[in-house]
Image (cartoon, rainbow, N blue to C red):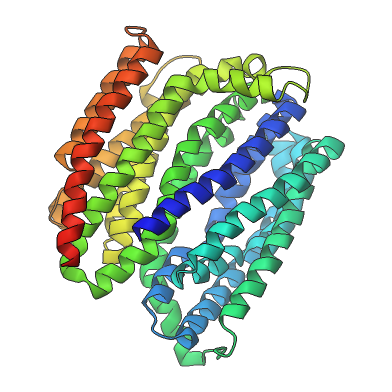
Length: 485
């Protein structure tokens, strides 16, 4: 699992790197107002589209990972697919029909009507993707999964750039539809290759049993997914009724940059969800030790990535502007200058969510303690919304929402850690984790208030972190050696 987690991180980083290049070019090609509309459309689609998920992906991954034959795994796949499409088709129809009302009446942005209707069609095409991905994860075909991530990212940039250049805002959604069609055809072909010779459809009783088994985790994950999507996407949806499209674009760009810290935890959970499930089922006595070791390593990498992004977010885009100076007319640092001060609290909020995501995939799903996840995500959503609407004051609405994401993420993570101690029986943070987090917080505060030069502070931070890394991972290596004996 350790080696695949490292490969996952690198492959996802590479794929995300291509995606970032694509996003930067799109940001350069579109106006700030059009980019704000993409943020609004993304929020609407995500909030509506999340209801089609039903937690099928995580539930199917767990059940497929627990099967002993490919025939059983195929039956889980079919059962998950049937449920997924029974929900997706009505939702796609609803989105297509209500798009004119949302564009003309609710948001008074008629430009979003056609993209919303185009996305309704895209929903039907991409509906099977999470279930198909669950098969690959559940059967632990990580080599294909990580190669595919990189390959589809390359195809994506080949589609998006020319179509956005030609059709601007609408071109973004033409490209998305084309990408999902290609994605689905490739994955369907591979999945049916995996099941070749083992294709046996479930009967009625088996289908009912499979659906119940998937939903034993799936319904909890479904509710958690709704709560998380509302938390992440409600910002543009709420702000769009109070600010102009340019301000919305500024906020959307800040979220685009800040949310990149999540890709580290996503890369790790690609491996930990099926692997920790198998360990819990087959090596229960060593599960706590293995989880703690994996979690400590994950916290280390996510925290370093987050602190680095906070320190050098603007410097990064100065370099980006130099590299992509041949595209567009206005540098990103000038075009989106007002976004950078929004990012620090946002990044910390997404860092906190990343740690929650680690605990959910590596601990709560394998042990089926999903009610804690629901409580945690509910707190994250409620605190964020309450902070924006009732607690924080000020006319700078984008910054107010940025701070709300910070408070929501941090408070939820604290509660989740405490709940795991009370109901699972051990602290998910080691003393080394706490030292690293304390040093990170002090470093961010000192740089944020200009107490210390950020370049010198980062050097000190990295040296101290490396020392912690050496001590902690030496202990982890010793633990892993004992477990193998």
